[in-house]
Structure formats: C-alpha cells, structure tokens
Length: 73
Image 1 (tube, helix red, strand yellow):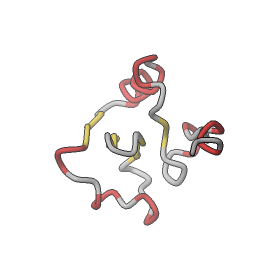
Image 2 (cartoon, rainbow, N blue to C red; image 1 turned 45 degrees about the vertical axis):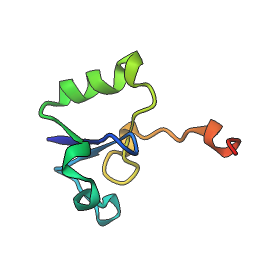
Image 3 (cartoon, rainbow, N blue to C red; image 1 turned 120 degrees about the vertical axis):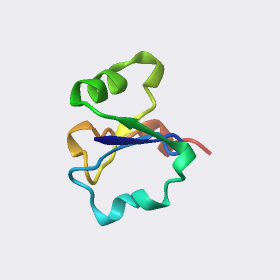
Image 4 (cartoon, helix red, strand yellow; image 1 turned 135 degrees about the horizontal axis):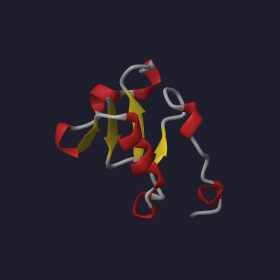
C-alpha cells in the first residue's frame, strides 16, 4: 500500500518505509491511500498530479529532484 502526503506532495511506500520518511507525522486527514502498484503508477503519471513524486528514501525509482526549486525565492 502507498500513502500520498497531500501537504508535501510525496508518495510513500509502506512496504519499504524508512525512518527518514516520518510517516506517523503525516496528519490522517491529509493522507490518501493507494492500494495497487498500477494505481500508484497511474497517479504519478497523471498530468494533474505532475508535482507529486516518490519519496527519495522509500521510493528512489520514482523520485525526481525538482531543479526549479533551487531558483525559487
């Protein structure tokens, strides 16, 4: 199962959680659950969700660093 952090726009994999993910700190009302891998892939591939990315600790295959965030003030 996957948890989507709606505040930070990050998807976490609950089968490979790491300490750095801080999943218990995500408020229950700001979570979205995805139950299948295909559903998670469709969620990340959807153009409406283009700012969502995989967690760099538990989902490194789906993590992309946003280079434009460096230049934001």
